Length: 467
Image (cartoon, rainbow, N blue to C red; front, side, top):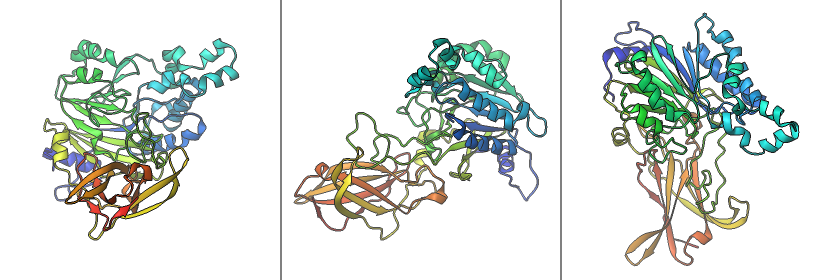
Protein backbone atom coordinates (compact mmCIF):
# COMPACT_ATOMS: atom_id res chain seq x y z
CA UNK A 1 0.00 0.00 0.00
CA UNK A 2 2.80 2.40 0.88
CA UNK A 3 5.95 3.35 -1.00
CA UNK A 4 8.47 2.12 1.56
CA UNK A 5 12.13 1.52 0.72
CA UNK A 6 13.53 -2.03 0.98
CA UNK A 7 15.79 -0.98 3.86
CA UNK A 8 12.86 0.57 5.73
CA UNK A 9 10.64 -2.41 5.08
CA UNK A 10 13.23 -4.76 6.54
CA UNK A 11 13.78 -2.52 9.55
CA UNK A 12 10.07 -2.25 10.14
CA UNK A 13 9.69 -6.01 9.93
CA UNK A 14 12.35 -6.25 12.62
CA UNK A 15 10.50 -3.74 14.75
CA UNK A 16 7.51 -6.05 14.79
CA UNK A 17 9.71 -9.01 15.67
CA UNK A 18 9.27 -10.48 12.20
CA UNK A 19 11.70 -11.94 9.68
CA UNK A 20 11.72 -10.90 6.05
CA UNK A 21 13.14 -11.92 2.71
CA UNK A 22 13.55 -15.65 3.09
CA UNK A 23 13.72 -15.60 6.88
CA UNK A 24 17.09 -13.86 7.16
CA UNK A 25 17.71 -11.76 10.26
CA UNK A 26 17.36 -8.00 9.87
CA UNK A 27 18.59 -4.94 11.75
CA UNK A 28 16.83 -3.68 14.87
CA UNK A 29 15.02 -0.32 14.83
CA UNK A 30 17.23 2.73 15.08
CA UNK A 31 15.17 4.09 17.99
CA UNK A 32 12.17 3.13 20.11
CA UNK A 33 9.86 5.57 21.87
CA UNK A 34 7.01 5.22 24.30
CA UNK A 35 4.38 7.89 23.69
CA UNK A 36 1.65 8.98 26.13
CA UNK A 37 -0.42 12.05 26.83
CA UNK A 38 -3.05 13.31 29.23
CA UNK A 39 -2.38 10.86 32.04
CA UNK A 40 -4.17 13.16 34.52
CA UNK A 41 -2.77 11.91 37.81
CA UNK A 42 -5.17 13.12 40.51
CA UNK A 43 -4.12 10.77 43.30
CA UNK A 44 -2.63 7.31 43.78
CA UNK A 45 -5.58 5.63 42.02
CA UNK A 46 -4.32 6.65 38.56
CA UNK A 47 -0.71 5.60 39.16
CA UNK A 48 -1.01 1.82 38.47
CA UNK A 49 -2.06 2.20 34.83
CA UNK A 50 0.73 4.75 34.31
CA UNK A 51 3.24 2.33 35.80
CA UNK A 52 1.80 -0.42 33.60
CA UNK A 53 2.42 1.67 30.49
CA UNK A 54 5.94 2.57 31.61
CA UNK A 55 6.68 -1.07 32.35
CA UNK A 56 5.55 -2.06 28.86
CA UNK A 57 7.81 0.60 27.38
CA UNK A 58 10.74 -0.53 29.56
CA UNK A 59 10.27 -4.16 28.58
CA UNK A 60 10.03 -3.12 24.91
CA UNK A 61 13.46 -1.48 25.09
CA UNK A 62 12.54 2.17 24.57
CA UNK A 63 15.16 4.88 24.37
CA UNK A 64 12.83 7.64 25.55
CA UNK A 65 9.26 8.35 26.62
CA UNK A 66 7.21 11.29 25.36
CA UNK A 67 4.41 12.60 27.58
CA UNK A 68 2.61 15.34 25.66
CA UNK A 69 1.26 17.18 28.70
CA UNK A 70 -1.45 17.02 31.37
CA UNK A 71 0.41 14.92 33.88
CA UNK A 72 -0.79 16.56 37.11
CA UNK A 73 -4.58 16.76 36.84
CA UNK A 74 -5.11 19.79 39.09
CA UNK A 75 -1.73 21.44 38.71
CA UNK A 76 -0.54 20.43 42.17
CA UNK A 77 3.00 19.62 43.19
CA UNK A 78 2.04 16.44 45.03
CA UNK A 79 0.36 15.16 41.83
CA UNK A 80 3.44 15.92 39.74
CA UNK A 81 5.54 14.16 42.37
CA UNK A 82 3.46 11.01 41.84
CA UNK A 83 4.39 11.18 38.14
CA UNK A 84 8.08 11.56 38.96
CA UNK A 85 8.00 8.81 41.59
CA UNK A 86 6.40 6.37 39.12
CA UNK A 87 9.01 7.21 36.50
CA UNK A 88 11.95 6.60 38.83
CA UNK A 89 10.34 3.42 40.16
CA UNK A 90 10.22 1.91 36.65
CA UNK A 91 13.39 3.63 35.39
CA UNK A 92 15.65 4.06 38.46
CA UNK A 93 18.01 6.91 37.76
CA UNK A 94 16.30 7.19 34.35
CA UNK A 95 18.05 3.97 33.36
CA UNK A 96 16.87 0.86 31.55
CA UNK A 97 17.72 -2.52 33.12
CA UNK A 98 20.75 -2.79 30.81
CA UNK A 99 22.12 0.54 32.07
CA UNK A 100 21.11 2.69 29.09
CA UNK A 101 19.70 6.13 29.79
CA UNK A 102 16.01 6.46 28.94
CA UNK A 103 15.19 10.09 28.27
CA UNK A 104 12.22 11.92 29.74
CA UNK A 105 10.62 13.80 26.86
CA UNK A 106 7.84 15.43 28.85
CA UNK A 107 6.06 18.78 28.47
CA UNK A 108 3.60 20.65 30.62
CA UNK A 109 -0.03 20.80 29.52
CA UNK A 110 -2.75 23.17 30.70
CA UNK A 111 -3.71 20.98 33.67
CA UNK A 112 -0.11 20.92 34.90
CA UNK A 113 0.08 24.69 35.36
CA UNK A 114 -3.54 25.87 35.33
CA UNK A 115 -5.39 22.92 36.87
CA UNK A 116 -5.40 24.52 40.33
CA UNK A 117 -8.20 26.73 38.94
CA UNK A 118 -10.35 23.81 37.75
CA UNK A 119 -13.33 22.20 39.45
CA UNK A 120 -13.50 22.68 43.20
CA UNK A 121 -9.71 22.76 43.62
CA UNK A 122 -9.49 26.45 44.64
CA UNK A 123 -12.02 25.97 47.45
CA UNK A 124 -10.48 22.67 48.53
CA UNK A 125 -7.00 24.15 48.70
CA UNK A 126 -8.21 27.18 50.61
CA UNK A 127 -9.97 24.98 53.16
CA UNK A 128 -6.92 22.72 53.54
CA UNK A 129 -4.32 25.49 53.51
CA UNK A 130 -5.80 28.81 54.74
CA UNK A 131 -2.41 30.51 54.42
CA UNK A 132 -1.96 31.69 50.81
CA UNK A 133 1.82 31.23 51.02
CA UNK A 134 1.34 27.55 51.79
CA UNK A 135 -1.29 27.18 49.05
CA UNK A 136 1.11 28.77 46.58
CA UNK A 137 3.79 26.25 47.48
CA UNK A 138 1.44 23.44 46.42
CA UNK A 139 0.75 24.92 42.95
CA UNK A 140 3.09 24.08 40.07
CA UNK A 141 2.28 27.44 38.49
CA UNK A 142 3.97 29.32 41.33
CA UNK A 143 7.37 28.20 40.07
CA UNK A 144 7.10 25.80 37.11
CA UNK A 145 10.86 25.40 36.87
CA UNK A 146 11.29 24.51 40.56
CA UNK A 147 8.38 22.04 40.43
CA UNK A 148 9.88 20.38 37.36
CA UNK A 149 13.36 20.13 38.83
CA UNK A 150 12.03 18.73 42.12
CA UNK A 151 9.93 16.02 40.45
CA UNK A 152 12.01 15.09 37.42
CA UNK A 153 15.56 15.91 38.61
CA UNK A 154 16.51 17.90 35.55
CA UNK A 155 16.49 21.58 34.53
CA UNK A 156 13.38 23.13 32.98
CA UNK A 157 13.22 25.48 30.00
CA UNK A 158 10.14 26.84 28.18
CA UNK A 159 11.38 25.19 24.98
CA UNK A 160 14.11 22.55 25.15
CA UNK A 161 16.11 20.21 22.93
CA UNK A 162 17.60 16.81 23.70
CA UNK A 163 19.40 14.24 21.61
CA UNK A 164 19.00 10.47 21.62
CA UNK A 165 21.23 8.42 19.32
CA UNK A 166 21.78 11.53 17.20
CA UNK A 167 18.03 12.13 16.84
CA UNK A 168 16.83 15.56 17.97
CA UNK A 169 13.83 15.98 20.27
CA UNK A 170 12.27 19.36 20.96
CA UNK A 171 9.59 20.08 23.54
CA UNK A 172 7.51 23.23 24.04
CA UNK A 173 5.61 23.60 27.30
CA UNK A 174 2.07 24.92 27.64
CA UNK A 175 1.71 28.57 26.59
CA UNK A 176 5.22 28.54 25.08
CA UNK A 177 4.27 27.19 21.62
CA UNK A 178 4.60 30.69 20.16
CA UNK A 179 8.31 30.62 21.08
CA UNK A 180 8.97 27.57 18.90
CA UNK A 181 9.55 29.50 15.68
CA UNK A 182 12.29 31.64 17.19
CA UNK A 183 13.83 28.60 18.93
CA UNK A 184 14.01 26.66 15.67
CA UNK A 185 15.51 29.60 13.80
CA UNK A 186 18.15 30.15 16.47
CA UNK A 187 19.11 26.48 16.82
CA UNK A 188 18.49 25.17 13.31
CA UNK A 189 22.14 24.91 12.29
CA UNK A 190 23.45 23.73 15.66
CA UNK A 191 20.88 20.93 15.87
CA UNK A 192 21.10 20.00 12.18
CA UNK A 193 17.35 20.34 11.63
CA UNK A 194 17.58 20.90 7.89
CA UNK A 195 19.07 17.48 7.19
CA UNK A 196 17.06 14.58 5.88
CA UNK A 197 17.05 12.84 9.26
CA UNK A 198 13.71 13.16 11.07
CA UNK A 199 13.50 15.20 14.24
CA UNK A 200 10.72 15.03 16.79
CA UNK A 201 8.65 17.68 18.52
CA UNK A 202 6.16 17.48 21.40
CA UNK A 203 3.63 19.96 22.73
CA UNK A 204 0.27 19.60 24.41
CA UNK A 205 -2.16 21.09 21.88
CA UNK A 206 -2.47 19.75 18.35
CA UNK A 207 -0.77 21.89 15.70
CA UNK A 208 -3.65 23.66 13.99
CA UNK A 209 -5.16 22.14 10.82
CA UNK A 210 -3.19 18.89 11.04
CA UNK A 211 -4.47 15.81 12.88
CA UNK A 212 -8.27 15.40 12.92
CA UNK A 213 -8.67 18.38 10.59
CA UNK A 214 -9.23 22.10 11.16
CA UNK A 215 -12.02 21.48 13.69
CA UNK A 216 -9.85 19.45 16.11
CA UNK A 217 -10.79 20.39 19.66
CA UNK A 218 -8.28 22.60 21.47
CA UNK A 219 -5.75 22.99 18.64
CA UNK A 220 -3.17 25.77 18.77
CA UNK A 221 -4.65 27.65 15.79
CA UNK A 222 -1.51 27.15 13.78
CA UNK A 223 1.25 28.58 16.00
CA UNK A 224 3.41 25.46 15.80
CA UNK A 225 2.18 24.56 12.30
CA UNK A 226 3.67 27.76 10.94
CA UNK A 227 6.96 27.06 12.70
CA UNK A 228 7.22 23.44 11.56
CA UNK A 229 6.01 23.71 7.97
CA UNK A 230 9.48 24.58 6.70
CA UNK A 231 10.80 21.25 8.01
CA UNK A 232 9.45 18.28 6.01
CA UNK A 233 11.50 16.00 8.28
CA UNK A 234 9.67 17.16 11.44
CA UNK A 235 7.40 14.75 13.32
CA UNK A 236 5.10 16.41 15.89
CA UNK A 237 3.38 14.59 18.77
CA UNK A 238 0.48 16.28 20.56
CA UNK A 239 -2.47 15.49 22.84
CA UNK A 240 -5.06 17.59 24.70
CA UNK A 241 -8.11 16.39 22.71
CA UNK A 242 -8.25 12.83 24.15
CA UNK A 243 -9.29 11.54 20.71
CA UNK A 244 -9.01 7.79 20.24
CA UNK A 245 -6.15 6.06 18.43
CA UNK A 246 -8.82 4.07 16.60
CA UNK A 247 -9.44 7.30 14.66
CA UNK A 248 -7.29 7.01 11.53
CA UNK A 249 -7.03 10.81 11.39
CA UNK A 250 -4.56 10.59 14.28
CA UNK A 251 -1.78 10.69 11.67
CA UNK A 252 -1.52 13.58 9.19
CA UNK A 253 1.12 14.28 6.58
CA UNK A 254 1.44 17.62 4.87
CA UNK A 255 4.36 20.03 5.10
CA UNK A 256 5.50 17.82 8.03
CA UNK A 257 4.10 14.82 9.90
CA UNK A 258 1.73 15.28 12.86
CA UNK A 259 0.56 12.53 15.23
CA UNK A 260 -2.19 12.67 17.86
CA UNK A 261 -1.27 10.82 21.05
CA UNK A 262 -4.70 10.11 22.63
CA UNK A 263 -4.96 9.80 26.45
CA UNK A 264 -4.01 7.39 29.22
CA UNK A 265 -6.89 8.77 31.30
CA UNK A 266 -10.06 8.59 29.17
CA UNK A 267 -11.17 8.86 25.54
CA UNK A 268 -13.29 11.85 24.53
CA UNK A 269 -16.55 10.92 22.76
CA UNK A 270 -16.78 13.88 20.44
CA UNK A 271 -19.64 16.36 20.19
CA UNK A 272 -22.70 16.18 17.94
CA UNK A 273 -23.22 12.44 18.34
CA UNK A 274 -26.30 11.39 20.27
CA UNK A 275 -24.17 9.31 22.66
CA UNK A 276 -21.19 11.68 22.57
CA UNK A 277 -20.26 14.47 24.91
CA UNK A 278 -22.52 17.54 25.14
CA UNK A 279 -21.57 20.91 23.71
CA UNK A 280 -23.54 23.95 24.83
CA UNK A 281 -25.04 24.67 21.39
CA UNK A 282 -26.35 21.12 20.88
CA UNK A 283 -30.00 20.13 21.38
CA UNK A 284 -30.81 18.09 24.47
CA UNK A 285 -29.65 14.51 23.88
CA UNK A 286 -31.78 11.45 24.41
CA UNK A 287 -28.93 9.02 25.13
CA UNK A 288 -26.33 8.93 27.91
CA UNK A 289 -22.73 9.65 26.99
CA UNK A 290 -20.58 6.61 26.31
CA UNK A 291 -18.48 5.40 29.21
CA UNK A 292 -15.07 6.61 28.15
CA UNK A 293 -12.79 5.71 31.04
CA UNK A 294 -12.22 2.06 30.16
CA UNK A 295 -9.98 2.84 27.18
CA UNK A 296 -6.57 4.19 28.22
CA UNK A 297 -4.32 4.48 25.21
CA UNK A 298 -0.72 5.07 24.20
CA UNK A 299 1.81 4.17 21.52
CA UNK A 300 5.08 2.35 21.02
CA UNK A 301 6.92 3.99 18.12
CA UNK A 302 9.81 2.32 16.30
CA UNK A 303 12.00 4.53 14.11
CA UNK A 304 13.25 2.42 11.23
CA UNK A 305 15.33 4.45 8.80
CA UNK A 306 12.88 6.62 6.91
CA UNK A 307 9.83 4.90 8.40
CA UNK A 308 7.88 4.95 11.66
CA UNK A 309 6.06 1.87 12.92
CA UNK A 310 3.38 2.93 15.38
CA UNK A 311 1.88 0.31 17.65
CA UNK A 312 -1.43 1.52 19.11
CA UNK A 313 -2.26 0.05 22.52
CA UNK A 314 -4.69 0.32 25.37
CA UNK A 315 -3.27 -0.37 28.81
CA UNK A 316 -6.27 -1.82 30.65
CA UNK A 317 -6.52 -5.17 28.90
CA UNK A 318 -3.14 -4.74 27.23
CA UNK A 319 -4.32 -5.09 23.63
CA UNK A 320 -3.65 -3.38 20.34
CA UNK A 321 -6.53 -1.15 19.22
CA UNK A 322 -5.76 -1.78 15.55
CA UNK A 323 -3.05 -2.76 13.09
CA UNK A 324 0.24 -0.91 13.35
CA UNK A 325 0.55 2.25 11.31
CA UNK A 326 3.56 2.18 8.97
CA UNK A 327 4.35 5.83 8.24
CA UNK A 328 7.07 6.57 5.67
CA UNK A 329 9.03 9.79 6.07
CA UNK A 330 10.51 9.70 2.56
CA UNK A 331 8.33 12.48 1.13
CA UNK A 332 5.62 10.24 -0.33
CA UNK A 333 3.01 11.33 2.26
CA UNK A 334 0.55 8.42 2.07
CA UNK A 335 -1.02 9.64 5.33
CA UNK A 336 -2.13 12.92 3.77
CA UNK A 337 -5.86 13.04 4.43
CA UNK A 338 -6.76 13.35 0.74
CA UNK A 339 -4.64 10.33 -0.17
CA UNK A 340 -5.57 8.12 2.73
CA UNK A 341 -9.30 8.85 2.75
CA UNK A 342 -9.48 8.04 -0.97
CA UNK A 343 -8.23 4.53 -0.21
CA UNK A 344 -10.68 3.84 2.60
CA UNK A 345 -13.48 1.34 2.12
CA UNK A 346 -16.61 1.92 4.18
CA UNK A 347 -17.84 -0.77 6.57
CA UNK A 348 -21.07 -2.47 5.51
CA UNK A 349 -24.00 -4.24 7.11
CA UNK A 350 -24.24 -7.96 6.55
CA UNK A 351 -26.75 -9.18 3.98
CA UNK A 352 -30.18 -9.42 5.52
CA UNK A 353 -29.44 -6.97 8.35
CA UNK A 354 -32.63 -5.33 9.60
CA UNK A 355 -33.60 -2.13 11.41
CA UNK A 356 -36.24 -2.26 14.13
CA UNK A 357 -38.10 0.61 15.81
CA UNK A 358 -39.87 0.78 19.16
CA UNK A 359 -41.58 3.49 21.18
CA UNK A 360 -41.68 3.89 24.93
CA UNK A 361 -40.95 6.12 27.90
CA UNK A 362 -37.25 6.53 28.55
CA UNK A 363 -35.00 9.20 30.05
CA UNK A 364 -33.19 11.98 28.25
CA UNK A 365 -29.61 13.11 29.03
CA UNK A 366 -30.89 15.11 32.01
CA UNK A 367 -32.80 12.12 33.40
CA UNK A 368 -36.25 13.49 32.54
CA UNK A 369 -38.87 10.85 31.56
CA UNK A 370 -39.48 11.31 27.84
CA UNK A 371 -41.60 9.74 25.10
CA UNK A 372 -38.87 8.20 22.93
CA UNK A 373 -38.47 6.33 19.64
CA UNK A 374 -35.53 3.90 19.63
CA UNK A 375 -33.98 2.65 16.38
CA UNK A 376 -31.97 -0.58 16.71
CA UNK A 377 -29.68 -2.28 14.20
CA UNK A 378 -26.92 -4.92 14.12
CA UNK A 379 -23.33 -3.71 14.09
CA UNK A 380 -21.85 -3.26 10.64
CA UNK A 381 -18.89 -5.37 9.64
CA UNK A 382 -15.42 -3.85 9.29
CA UNK A 383 -14.03 -3.47 5.78
CA UNK A 384 -10.48 -4.25 4.74
CA UNK A 385 -9.45 -0.75 5.86
CA UNK A 386 -12.02 0.53 8.34
CA UNK A 387 -14.04 -0.29 11.41
CA UNK A 388 -17.29 1.51 12.16
CA UNK A 389 -16.69 4.91 13.74
CA UNK A 390 -20.32 6.02 13.98
CA UNK A 391 -23.68 5.62 12.27
CA UNK A 392 -25.91 8.05 10.41
CA UNK A 393 -29.58 7.52 11.30
CA UNK A 394 -32.22 9.33 9.23
CA UNK A 395 -35.97 9.55 9.74
CA UNK A 396 -37.50 9.71 6.28
CA UNK A 397 -41.05 10.88 5.49
CA UNK A 398 -42.99 10.26 2.29
CA UNK A 399 -45.34 12.46 0.28
CA UNK A 400 -46.75 10.94 -2.89
CA UNK A 401 -43.65 9.93 -4.90
CA UNK A 402 -41.17 12.02 -2.87
CA UNK A 403 -39.26 10.98 0.23
CA UNK A 404 -37.42 13.50 2.36
CA UNK A 405 -35.39 13.50 5.55
CA UNK A 406 -37.15 15.01 8.56
CA UNK A 407 -34.48 14.28 11.19
CA UNK A 408 -30.87 13.07 11.13
CA UNK A 409 -28.64 11.96 13.97
CA UNK A 410 -25.16 10.54 14.26
CA UNK A 411 -24.42 8.00 16.97
CA UNK A 412 -21.09 6.43 17.90
CA UNK A 413 -20.53 2.72 17.68
CA UNK A 414 -20.28 1.86 21.37
CA UNK A 415 -16.92 0.22 20.64
CA UNK A 416 -15.43 2.89 18.36
CA UNK A 417 -12.62 3.51 20.87
CA UNK A 418 -12.03 -0.11 21.94
CA UNK A 419 -9.87 -2.95 20.58
CA UNK A 420 -11.48 -5.10 17.87
CA UNK A 421 -11.88 -7.92 20.41
CA UNK A 422 -14.46 -5.76 22.21
CA UNK A 423 -16.59 -4.94 19.15
CA UNK A 424 -20.26 -4.66 20.13
CA UNK A 425 -22.94 -6.74 18.39
CA UNK A 426 -25.54 -4.01 17.84
CA UNK A 427 -26.17 -0.28 17.86
CA UNK A 428 -29.05 2.03 18.70
CA UNK A 429 -30.12 5.63 18.27
CA UNK A 430 -32.84 7.38 20.27
CA UNK A 431 -35.14 10.22 19.15
CA UNK A 432 -37.65 11.97 21.33
CA UNK A 433 -41.13 11.63 19.83
CA UNK A 434 -41.27 15.43 19.78
CA UNK A 435 -38.34 15.50 17.32
CA UNK A 436 -40.38 13.61 14.72
CA UNK A 437 -43.49 14.78 12.80
CA UNK A 438 -46.68 13.34 14.28
CA UNK A 439 -49.13 11.38 12.19
CA UNK A 440 -46.83 11.04 9.21
CA UNK A 441 -45.52 7.66 7.96
CA UNK A 442 -41.78 7.39 8.58
CA UNK A 443 -39.06 4.96 7.75
CA UNK A 444 -35.59 4.91 9.32
CA UNK A 445 -32.41 4.53 7.27
CA UNK A 446 -29.10 3.62 8.92
CA UNK A 447 -25.65 3.86 7.33
CA UNK A 448 -22.29 2.87 8.88
CA UNK A 449 -19.62 5.58 8.71
CA UNK A 450 -15.84 5.31 8.97
CA UNK A 451 -13.74 8.05 10.54
CA UNK A 452 -13.04 9.97 7.32
CA UNK A 453 -16.79 10.09 6.65
CA UNK A 454 -17.12 7.44 3.95
CA UNK A 455 -20.54 5.79 4.33
CA UNK A 456 -21.65 2.24 3.69
CA UNK A 457 -24.98 1.27 2.13
CA UNK A 458 -28.13 2.02 4.12
CA UNK A 459 -30.46 -0.50 5.64
CA UNK A 460 -34.05 0.73 5.99
CA UNK A 461 -37.03 -0.26 8.09
CA UNK A 462 -39.36 -2.46 6.09
CA UNK A 463 -42.62 -0.83 7.09
CA UNK A 464 -43.96 2.58 8.00
CA UNK A 465 -43.78 3.86 11.55
CA UNK A 466 -46.17 6.56 12.73
CA UNK A 467 -45.45 8.69 15.79
